[in-house]
Length: 292
Image (cartoon, rainbow, N blue to C red; front, side, top):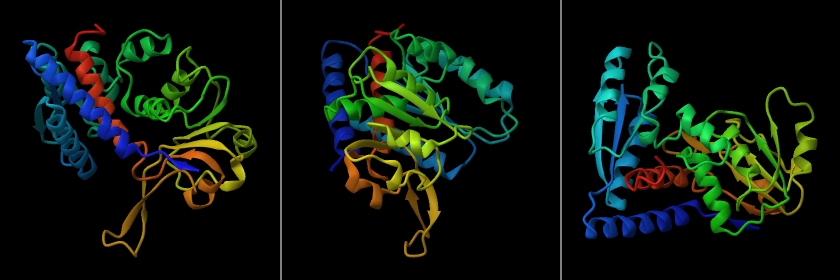
């Protein structure tokens, strides 16, 4: 069993981006500029945005953070998005989710210029990805594909089971795994809450990508010997032995599943670190104008 080290790969990717940025600047181009909109004071969102700002520094990007109170109106937020769409110095931007309940998240996503949508959530980018056109791929699926690529994991002709059908992870990663690419060319089955006999389906899989948000869902009896397991889950569960009172749990029963695997991602330290560096890759792509 080999552990897939997301922290190590993310550091390598960010170092590569930093070198590309310095080359751009040396050639007379401006530094890539990533902006973020943060609404309210959600603790998880605050932490995640702070990590993105730090990653921008590591990659040599310029970054901007626009903060708004949670009582901002939808029209006011849409105006801020329009301003960023029209700001020629901003190469890409994100609107940190979740948003307050009174704001229509889909309306907000669709208001972002697809050419600056470095989160890859706009329907135009989702559509382009599904048919293999150049686009911004959402960060977590992109990070998963990068891990498979860097560890030279063979996906061609393999049976891949994706657990979960979210628009952010499940659906896009299933699409990417089917495409004529490397990694890709897999035969993909997507399982969800209405799928019968999930355990039996998983036992046939060469690759399992678990993105359910259900701690410990994938157990050892669901995994065949030599399978590759990618655990996307990051759920806080109570743990009185920790100073914080909780720990992060993946969707996989790591302790019992890991011995059966050829490769497996840990939680934390697997897919998670790749998400932010994938956002950085999209920002560099936006600045180079190679997509739109």
